[in-house]
Image 1 (cartoon, rainbow, N blue to C red):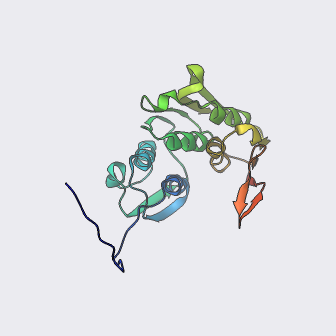
Image 2 (cartoon, helix red, strand yellow; image 1 turned 120 degrees about the vertical axis):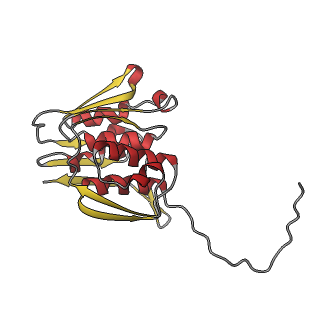
Image 3 (cartoon, rainbow, N blue to C red; image 1 turned 180 degrees about the vertical axis):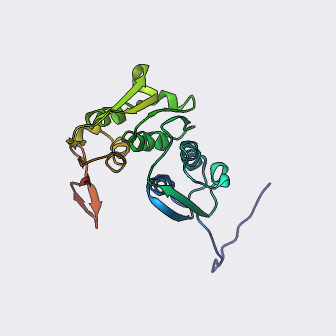
Length: 216
């Protein structure tokens, strides 16, 4: 079929764009970790974010049933302060972000958790997620070759420590460490800085970036 498009002088109408996938993952997890009701508007509707919602529901988070199959534009999550099940097997589908972020979020919780994925996700290396979490006191084990599934168990009475995550590698792996201080018990300080040669660009200029996450 041939379609001919002619130039127009003006285009007018309304367009609803989907929400940001990266932000949607984090909004769901933080809402489950919080205490009380969180309202999320315009979450990304894709399968990856749905994997995060399904995993949180399996952990016992109070999400509407519809959120597991497809996120509505307006979603209420009743958080319980991250008081989740102490044992769960989570299928994260093809979502590496779900696997990385929940590994960090669960590393500070008591219990035993296994995170697996589909055939494609099971080929991705996860040692750079596991290694810094181990240094923070969590017990994280991987399958052969440092690949999923990931088994997470929080060590009893993890020692207070300052963890430097500069060796965690890519930013996607460092982000897997970020939820851990918020989910752990007791004081903890995590220093995260870009690896050598990395920078953030703000207003057209490059800066070295550093984030310090503290829980007291």
